[in-house]
Structures are given as C-alpha cells and as structure tokens.
Image (cartoon, rainbow, N blue to C red; front, side, top):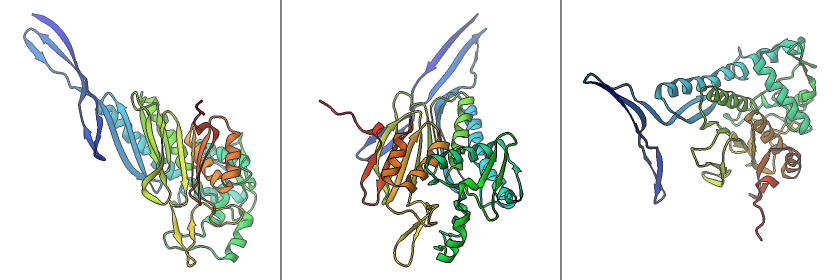
Length: 355
C-alpha cells in the first residue's frame, strides 16, 4: 500500500495584554508532511514559521533584530549574518579603533589622497550631501573638537582648546574623488567622526541581508536608528518616540511600516557641568559646544543612512530652520521636541482636518 497526505498546523505568536501587563502567547506555526509507504510512517523535520529575535552590542550601542521566517535554521543563519554586519562596519568606521579605516584616514589623509573602501566612500558621499543640504549643520569633521570631550569622565574642552580646534571643523576641507575613490584633507589636524551616520549605514546593510534571504517582515535597530521591513504581518509596527526626560515613557507612538526612523537626543550621552548645564554629544560645528534649544529630533524616511544624518542636522539647525529644510525634501518627515517640551511635526504627520 502506498499513499501520501500533507498536513498543516497554523498558529502565530500573539501579544496578549491585560491590566497593563504583557504576556506572550506562543503558538507554533509549523508545516509537515506525513508519508505512508508500505505501512511505514516517515516524519520529516518540521519547519517552524515564527518570529525570531536576536540581540547584540556593537558600535557602542545595543542591536536588536526581530523578523518572521519559515525555518529555524535559516533564521539562525540570517540573524548571525545581520549581527555580523555591525561588527564589520565598526571595524571600518570606529574612531575608537586604532586599526579602523577611519583612524588610518585621520592619520594620513592630510598628506595626500587615500584610497578607501566602497562602504566608507558611500558614507562620506552621503555625509557630504547632508552637509551641503544643511549648510554645514551636519559636519563629520566635528571630530576635530568632539575628540576633546570625555562624556564618561564628565570632561569638556576649555575655551582655548575650542578656539584652537574650530578652524579645522569644515566639511569643505574633505575632498572626495569619485573616479579614484579617494579621500583627502586640505589641512593638518582634521579628524572625522562618523558617529552621526555610520550606524544608519550598518542598519541599511543589515536590511539588505534580510531582503536577500527572502525575509519580508522585520525590525532592525541600533540605538536610535531603526528600519522596518514591511509590516508586522497584517498590522503596523508601533514605534515609540521616547520622552527625552523620562526613560520609561513615550512622548508619542507612531504606527509605521517599511520606513527608516532615526532619533537624536540630548539624553543619549551627557553630563551636567559645574553650573548644572547639560553637556551632550550633539555639537554645533560653529561653536564646538552642545546645541541648546532642543531635546530630541526624530526623522522618518526611506533609509537610515539618510535619516541618521538628517536627525543630527535638524537638531543643530533648531525647530524653525530644521522644519523648513525637511519640508523641502520628498518622503521625509520629522518630529521635534524642543527644550520647552513642545512638539513640532512636519506637514506629512499632521492629521487631515475633519469637516
């Protein structure tokens, strides 16, 4: 006797909330085939479709990945590959690594053109684009004064140190040669820092890995930078923009799908100086000091390489000029929370008027 029967058991991991407490109800979603051959029952390995979650720390920030996959072995392979991307980008672009490509560039580019990798050149090109767009509010050469700060030790530079470093903060002194794929500095002492854009690039690369592996629903974040791939299987992803002065609360929650989201805030790395003023890591290229007037900026767009750079640019420009810049850009929206805790949003996020 011979024959065959295909069977399917369907379910899904559901979030069940009640009384303010979240419980995870896990229901397997598996596919199997039962074969009957001359009285012998063969059970192949089940392939379980489910949400898979991975986490790591790289680029001095927590990495979180969540995606839907039909097979556990594939999910493990893809998850490891995506997390590895962040370590690879860190090895290339970290200013904290003496052997990184950025560190070698900082040491040598003032002596002549330096050939760089495809990845690094792509980040430099986008950095230049955002710098031009924002008239220098975003500037990767801020490292020339940024390196004088030590946020862990609560140390900031003196006025004399700032006056000495500021003449070397000028994105126009970084020369890019597209044909030769080289970078050159016009003057000695320039130090580039890609902390305001490299994580966004790594998130984009991670999403590319997911797409190439057939993943269609995912959330990938690195600190304040996030990409959403598709929706959450029939419903939107709910993304909270945190209250800058209350870590456990959200200022607003947005239903989103298939977008990039980047937030820059004065709460990420900071200390209070002797006068009680907040000294944070988002520095003005003009003064070399922490930008005042805003608490956070969130940019929504198509890719995190762009949204990462724009979130810093808007923070430096301030609410009025920042919103004006964003309104000129297609497919980009912004949420700004100023130092009076007032929220400003771009036109694309304003609900339509009801009659």
